[in-house]
Length: 263
Image 1 (cartoon, rainbow, N blue to C red):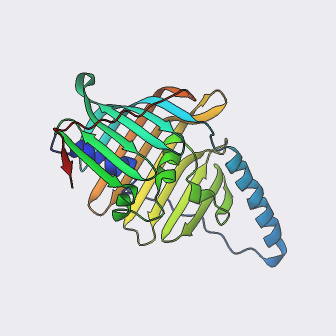
Image 2 (image 1 turned 120 degrees about the vertical axis):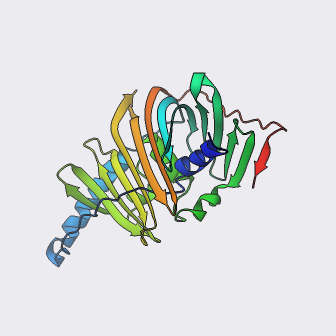
Image 3 (image 1 turned 135 degrees about the vertical axis):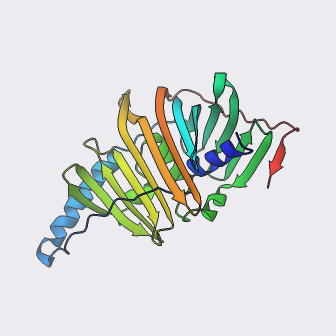
């Protein structure tokens, strides 16, 4: 592996610092007439409430994901042990050949920390570091929502356009330079999410083709992320296994003195 390659993968892929190869076209309809505008608004409000009601709610998630990470035509088959405390942090340990840990990441609403154990390097940045590559609307809540299979918060805001397509409900809209388009499945969970900057320079595509029901809570069974920003392209394909909810988790993250800091 080249120096810092896994560190870059973790920063770009899991902080959503870049966004996807192709975005789906937003549904476009004619403007409603004054006579049915109120009816359409009420119907959209009802559908939005259905989506919000299906947002998965739990305290912690612990899973093991067989994953393929790809960046700039280089791919790695790894295992990601992932722990999430909702609203507090995401901890990821990446193991490679023979179960050897090669990288560890801790992402919180305020910071990003990555240990590259192969090259003995350490990256620590404020979460705002991702805005160097993405729209300012991308925050910790966006990352967490994607990983736990919830709708990204801004896509289910009151200003979202909620429409009905053959495959289910669709939420679309634009906010502060970021356009979004979300297709929901029959369980009102986000089957696909597309985010892109309005200038087209950065795109993110997330697909969750399969959800798993754990004690009445729907969480991803498989998750595919594809992103591109500037010259950076990232793909992450994950298969969640042995997912457990609401059990105590910790975030061990000790930095040895021998590790050098990446500026």
